[in-house]
Figure 1 (cartoon, rainbow, N blue to C red):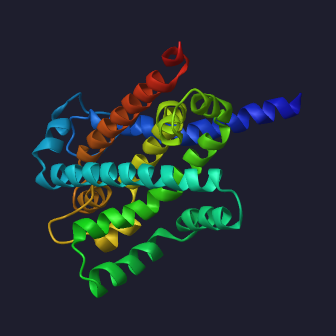
Figure 2 (cartoon, helix red, strand yellow; figure 1 turned 45 degrees about the horizontal axis):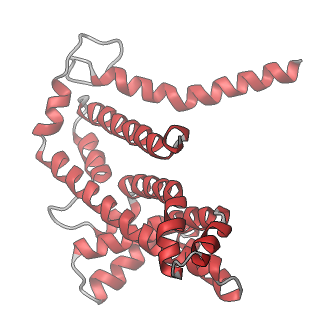
Length: 259
């Protein structure tokens, strides 16, 4: 009996550790005071307006959105081809490919950022926009490859074989039968890749340039010199966007969509 109470207490503490900071951010974002403080001095929405009036935050938000979108889409395309090679051609080569694609997740992001800066920017003089996409692609590839590979392994191969016996070519059966089955995996991979790219700091720190900041880095810079609730308001907006995206993906891939 005591074990059950201990487990409940531990669960409550973990949930409090996760959600109390988020609740405090939401509360402080509506504070009318010029500093982040609790209790609130009054209710105001002006800090949400301040987000759009800050050129650095708006510009870095656009950069992060575009960067995460490009990296996630390219990562899903590469992940799909890699998953097909790994699942359809099992053996030592496919095992090596899987290990190679998953290896960036084992290396600290700050090391990846520094190595890419030395190789891409210093040695090869690649433009920063391209270098940033390549850097973030390395960040998201392990998620795309792992999730899509798992989805392809769990797909019913008999449906693909049935389509081929009914006259479909191998490519046609894959496009018409296998790809729809992989939709949940690909959307999950996109969501996870997008979030990890959008939140990345170590790689972006080395590959960003003058006048080009990603949002997490811009938020860090803003907090360093300002203590108003603007960043809290921006965080609330990002949480709302993430929640909306999760609900949309659940609607597309959940039980209701299948019905």
